[in-house]
Length: 309
Image (tube, rainbow, N blue to C red; front, top):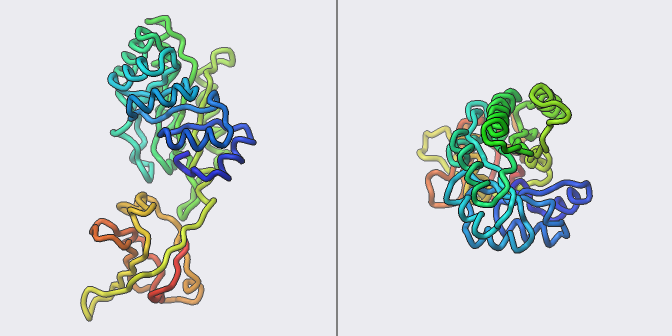
């Protein structure tokens, strides 16, 4: 849902048998309105209001992510008897173009405590989740995370007599933008090998994957207009190209030039100039700069031209 909430995408994936992970009640309503059964939906955001937990539960959602005691207690109060999976902190930020560490997840030791507490609160300690970072190019990042998960599965079974049933391997599978990435088949084959090394066929847990970006990263084109072109002095060789969309209109992942989206304008086909261009958004915020070091070939652009990305 985070990758694309378009109804056309939801309907197609629903027809293909996909399940859906929602990060808000607004995404939840969108999926439900498309006729998807609540049993095919999880609430995967660890940061949620108590009233939103109650709302989701009343809609039939019984699978929730968590990573804190306060959130767990909200789920126990407003979604009694639900299944819980705890998100853990993992490595992978060094090789992901858009890291998701620190804000989400908790230390594995705390995750074990939360799973035990979930049982004591009348919830079902169901599984563990992690996310190795968006646009993750290193397949081995999943292997490192799964090693932690296997230890936790064994500890819960042997020490607490709790049999966890699910692993949510999160997203991170990269889309083809500019830099070369392995096809999704390579990721699937390697992750399958990691899992079969750790679990027998009889003990294999339910596996959830969230391949959002890799599925829909190329499903749309953002069209923007050049609002203004300027230089900072008469002798400055750098042209500033300001468009009518920027970081705060959907391109936040260009912050720090983390995600390098393809940028196209018809004038690129005839331009051989390599002049320096800064591509920036329209707001009064000085951080609203998409690309300064990426070498975008927009030197022949004029005010009013369109840029496609």
